[in-house]
Image 1 (tube, rainbow, N blue to C red):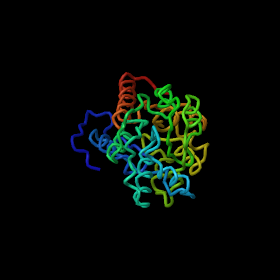
Image 2 (image 1 turned 90 degrees about the horizontal axis):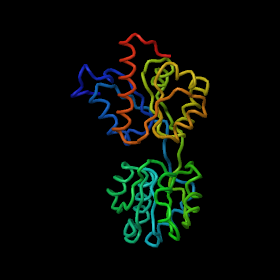
Image 3 (image 1 turned 90 degrees about the vertical axis):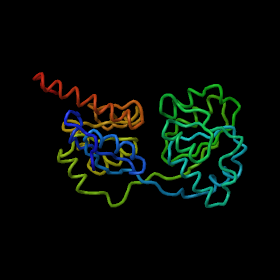
Image 4 (image 1 turned 45 degrees about the horizontal axis):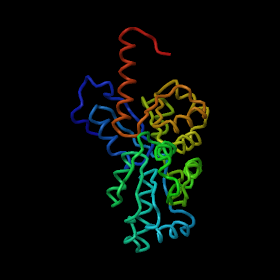
Length: 278
């Protein structure tokens, strides 16, 4: 990738950074890393497919305008809703004019707004649980449409109900392991030929551990910077035995790049001072 604007002073210069989510979701991150001279390596570990049964999704779309809230926890959920509405010819009901949308973070909010939804609330802390807690009592007595993955965390709908919401959760898409993964890129990671790997979801962690083995994932923490984007993903890595990891608290590309910069800056300063890193 062309690293226009990169300088030799960048702590990320020539650092090979593996991005484990889809290319279309990684445009800003790839650009941000490239500008600092890093070498983005795209290795999507999660793919998406249609739900096995569209019945619940279709039923919800048919009465979309009746919901008080539509809660989007990912860009994929936004795409799935719009795509299905287009296929059914019911786009006139999307977005619902009465419904308010809430988004888990800025990327999801942008996707929803581009699709025509009015985003009434965006979570300050980018997780589904945080979104529910921040909305809190605003949900009492409200009807909520929650389109998600078949492998989404089950805690969110119950948390919404705890605040008094009536939740209609549907499988908008399925999360699956990609086919035809690039074996050369996987070998490069296993052989320590990259400097960092970024995980964006527990599913990506699970899929990677299934490919290289849990033992190898644990071993990699001694050779490269394993980065978790968000606390939920960090917990998944810890449960897999990864104790040494970098946490990007925010899910935005800028926050991920900043976390990597801070880490490698600290490593360079320690090296210059003659400190041996454990």
